[in-house]
Length: 114
Length: 114
Image (cartoon, one colour):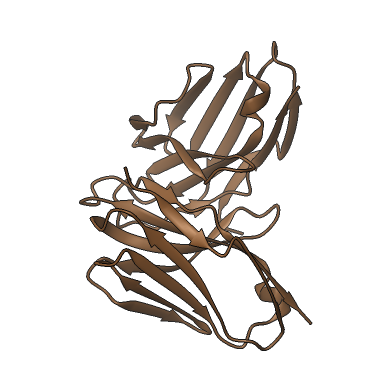
C-alpha cells in the first residue's frame, strides 16, 4: 500500500530564507507527483506536477525535484516571503495513471515571519 | 478563484439529521471528486465520477451517498453520521479521471457532527 510522508510537519523561518520541504513515498511505481498549497478556507492549489520520467520542475521561486528510485521529492522555495505561509501537500498518482487517485501526505505547515 | 464552488462552507448537524453538500464546477471538466480531510489524517479520496459515472468508491461507508446528475454538479448526501465524520470535505474536478490531469479543488465544506 502506497504511503506518503512529509517532513517536517511544521516549519517556521524568517523572511528571505531558502528552504526545503521533503516528501517520501513507499512504492516507487508512481505515475506522477504533485505539490499543492493549501490556504485556510481556500482549498488546494496545484503548484507543480512532475511526471515519473522527469527529474524536476520549476515555477518562479519554486523548484520541485523527484528521485523516483529512492522514493523522494523535495520542494525548494527560494527567498521565502510571508505570503508563502501555508500548508504544502505532496501527492502521488500511483501506478499506470489510468485513474486520478491521488495519495496525499499529511503536509508541512510553513510560517514565514516578516 | 479556481472555478470550483462548494456550499455550504460550514455545516453543523446532529447524528440523526440528513444533509447534502453541493459542488459545482465552471471549468468544463468531465471528472469530479470528493475528498475527506480529517484533523490528524492525510487527505483521503472518497469518490470519483467521470462523465456522471462513478469510477471509484474508496470503501466509503454507506452513510455517505454521492450523486452526480451531470458533469458540472456533484452532491454528497449525508445521513446518520458519526462524530468521527467531522472533517473538511473537499470537491475537485479535472478534464478526465486520468492521472495525467491536474485536479482543481474547491474551498471545502467544514462539517461538524454533534
